Length: 356
Ligand code: F6P
Image 1 (cartoon, rainbow, N blue to C red):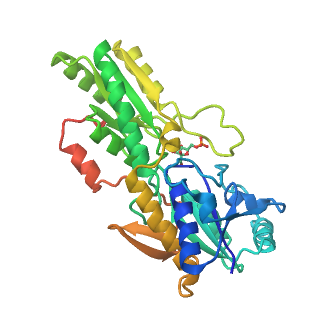
Image 2 (cartoon, rainbow, N blue to C red):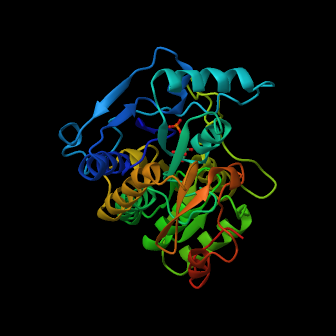
Image 3 (cartoon, rainbow, N blue to C red):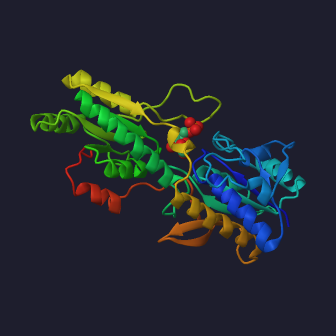
């Protein structure tokens, strides 16, 4: 048995905590080392990829650190736009086998787990661990990295509200999350934002302007809006950044700037935009994320030694970790904010403008 571990997709806080926990537990309980596969699952596309041996000594002190000592990549799926997946699967599995990997722990989001699902049934057992600041993994309530991203965004939002107040301005803070508004919702509520705009509820510019006017009339000439990068106006589309480097994926960005400009052009109300961007990903993990990552890291190693559980994703629901078969997931059906979401319902209790 040779267990390897990798971090795949966009990084987030808590990856190192999961790696360290898995390594320390494997050594302590089973007296085996874990092997690190660098730069995510796509590393298997390169036949010359190597593994690094991980020990308690080599992972000491990383639990509190953001990022990932195993590096990561967010290039999208190698199966995208490919008519015949088989040669790619064959070559990735060949690399894994030549490295002697029997079990591969994949700490990733739905994109990485979607890639892993394609590789099943070829002699390598996969164990999935959900991470992403977007919290959009289907079948899972909370991902590693989400709460730390919320925390860092809430801290930034407080500073933005302060300067908005000093200058009598409305400021919109753009947070990440892709097509899921969970991050924006939690940040907006915790920050007492006047506006929270999420992709699940396309906004009306008229509604936003009318709320701005009401606030100004009531004597409040400043305010904070939290807008998800994937939010867009009714009848319009999402905003994308023009350059997305080596990635095959189009990257969201510019939603806050677009809205601020619209407000200025249509009504002449001063409004500014701030993009928080990767600061949400690169922060150190808060305590809750460290503990969540440790729990999942330990469970992932346990699953490797549990012959009944193979090819599974470890999901958290109601604070309980359950193993669900990889094959049962449709990773394209990402988790989104449903109308019944308790956090959305909470926001609806207040005079927060949700854009409609
Ligand atoms: O999926 C995580 C995420 O951070 C999204 O919130 C964001 O849209 C995307 O990754 C950014 O990716 P990149 O690091 O390639 O810019």
